[in-house]
Image (cartoon, rainbow over all chains, first blue to last red; front, top):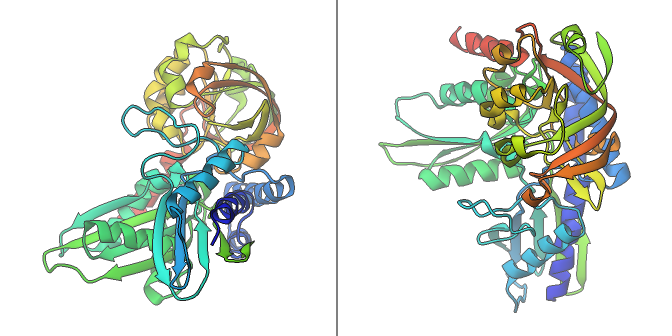
Length: 276
Length: 176
């Protein structure tokens, strides 16, 4: 596999993720608009759908918060990679930033100085899995601060009800996360596993188990609505991932994703790359 | 009710806007987020009657590429100072805790749909910039708006705060 292909593919997949949303995300907003009873909420949902069309037509980023560069990287067991993969993806991020497709968002956490190119120690953030095959699959998940800042994690008492914890926190916080949102829940494991499960849950949306649909209904029954101004549409999807945990623990993490559920995948092989 | 308003705003303009109304705004607006709010007194523009937009735009050369609102909650702590500078209108998303009491009789808070940066950019043109050393997202951009909207009057100058009403109703619902 060639390093320049990975760099180019990264730049291309970021461009796709920033300017267009997957069809299933758009359809979930459209079907929410059909059900929505609040006039203010319908105004917002229509504005959101207009914005999605404009972004695609003008090839502009959907949202000015082009997010942190987060990628899910699946490496085939027959891939031959003889270069620094993280550095190649970082180079693609720098290229996308230089071309004006990404706002420079990445800063030192303490002195707040901006690196200007959306990379730095730990950024891009790669979530890596080994899979079968001879391809490298890179999925860009640009993550804006609005929804990330409103995510939460609690080490609950095993006697607590995780559903109450989730709903109470959402009632307080979700209006700042650009609702309607997608909700990734991680339950169990260790402190860090719960956060990681919540992240993987929101990456894997949609969920349709009985408890996922029940939580979705209870969130929408809160009436918080698009942008926190009231309505039937607070969440578009809920996914729950779990791990078994210590008898004395009940970790619960919720990772929120705004309606701009940006994601795009590129496949890199020995022969080049193509956007999925 | 729908309104077309032009910045800078008069006291009467602000008074006429009630919670739930829809607004389209034209005229000059100024972006400001965290770092700019800490240095608002140093901004070279006259903010009297002005509009502050909680926004860190994506700008290519001098073209606005994407420019939706950022979360206003982070900027609530600066609101008394902002009002003292004569600002009459704040555009943002998510609302500002405690704002309803502070802006009563003085200013209005408009909600631009969060995440809709591409649509907003079509209505905005760069006129100037202050504090450019803060970087693209944190600088104060002077923008000319042409029918920026639809925005919802979310906190009006008569004491109504739609976010608070919605949040309190959600909490009552949870206690049932």
